[in-house]
Image (cartoon, rainbow, N blue to C red; front, side, top):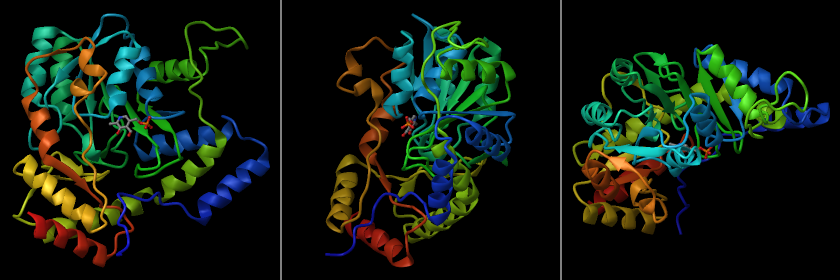
Length: 366
Ligand SMILES: Cc1ncc(COP(=O)(O)O)c(C=O)c1O
């Protein structure tokens, strides 16, 4: 049996092990000074004024919604083609998702449908999603939102290190949320970050993260949560940030090789010119139809190569299809993308042989 090619590996080594060891020995294991250092490193890396670390990339989304005052009955525009977290946090606020279709080529929010949907339903906020690690068209979304008085926050869980018009993702929307789960470009096992240029929201997020405890200990000035980070995770994070650029470079090279081996044979998530660096959380292939996609997936599986069909549209999820939501249309491109797309491995540890195996298996099964 040939070796399994996995979807991804966390890039962890001695440096991380030593940093965690040193942190434990220091006696500071809950949220403290190391977390502040990690937040400063991330703010500096993303060229944002502030960064707030939290327990994971779901609670960061919830905290952002709370910070902009989303409450019962409010509408939040969001793509249905996203991880379930983006939508669960809207329901957690007793608010209602206003699903918007995606562009069939980029798999990101369809800007013209977004505009129509905002004019028709007047949501309170837009949560854009940088699916697969590719930045949305932030300037266009911001312009439409500003004209209608809508707040724009970004679920950038997958796009740390990607660049939009040559600037790192992190300060284009009012706030950006990132995930540090094990399959992300860098990881702290579980973890999340918000970046923002708004001092008001930074302060709000810190308050919500710590049970909304004000300046007096054990005095809680609104409904808050334990969304705190830990210094053990921060020690890991500080080491991981140092690896981030090299991981992104390696992934970019692997993707170029995969794409050149498959050129003109199938489509990939299309990269608009405003994307100056895709972070390639995953490399997404788009097939002509579901039968072809399933055949290629089966072939890859038989060749011991992992793939993912991620994510089922949220409005079709067994639980969520029965909950209240709105949408301009039946979300045709979302539904079609789900039946024709396939994520293949593109992680930094792939050898030239691995790339050849993946390419050959796809070509053999087209
Ligand atoms: C688009 C998107 N949003 C939110 C999340 C949630 O992040 P976490 O798993 O850290 O809670 C993820 C994680 O996979 C994601 O891909």
